[in-house]
Length: 491
Image (cartoon, rainbow, N blue to C red; front, top):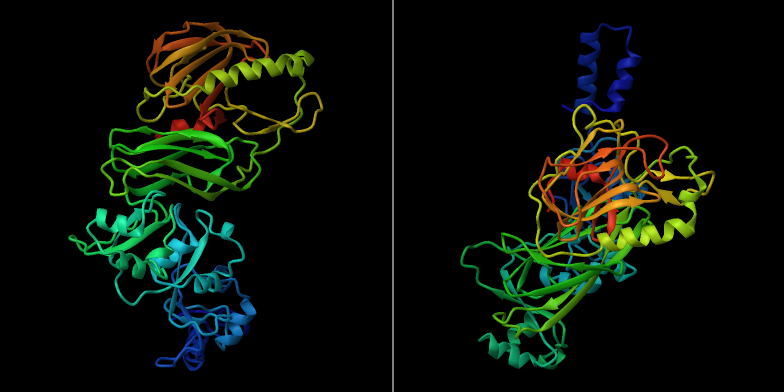
């Protein structure tokens, strides 16, 4: 039995009665009051229906299907909009001519309107209506997607890229198939309708009885693409993991910043990158391109695919205005130093040197004492808040030991105007760690370091207001939140 808001109000109204008598009366009233939610059993719906799931609210359902709460209430004759019951069947308005049960999922990297239509057997026009689409850009990675539930279990599929040097007949012959099966599976008008660069699907019998789709607009040699985190966040390290056949070459870009891929121990292709902390939240193009392996039936064709990904705000706070030496914010000084520092951290070496999560670079009791965290917006000497804190600050007096957090090779060790006595370590795959404001540096360029090795001492050199360690992590040529590297494993 469900106690609604109405029952609670009635309890208050009858508070002069004994509790047991009031509850008994209200239970009887509830039994006599029909919920009147959605469709009656056996009633034919006047449109597509959605089955209420755990955690749903009328507002969240309206938002998901882009309709108003008032229209939902009206079309379903709901007497009590505040009461939703798990399993209720709600008619969704505004979709005249559509029948069936609506389900929701999210758009994955590699999905397009055409590929989704082919995969689910739903006409493109119907997908546009179901999702109220006005632009292909709305099918960004992670966007909500509404589909009509399929009555039959989908078959496994094979995806093949039609290269610029192939006809549909040649592709079919190379795979020992029939070109007309591609025509039927891909809603083509005929064998002449296929265009170079299109990824065509063909249903196949699965020996295991399972269905594995993969990115539907990418060749079948690519079986999975994983983006972490999703969505991307300002100032966070990000990983792209591509599961594909051996022998593939991959490259790409995120918002025009180049990506490099390296094979890991599992045979996947990994790209480490970072989202700049000052990137404006919004949609940005993620491009993947490459060549298929020679063993693929696509004859080593080249491919390229672009899809929007969303970058959300990191919700970084604004620090109080900091007063520093004017020299340390003079562009004539900071610009060349920043350029030198960025160039060091932008070189990508192919050997991954670190294993697991990074160790803390400070001893106890300073490991969780952070006077300023990464990403905080900053103003120096009353300037506009055009700066951000590019690292994680640790408490500590002059002379406190600093430790290497992971295996790596020292690529810089020396004095700088803004950063003071500074050290940078290359950990491979475009990942670097950096240590600033030291009183003493204990390593030299070219040294190989191990986790826990003393590399320097805390100091107060450079642009500081007091002694501390400023610790940076770079990934893909930009600074990212170091705290993440202490709390999780990349990749």
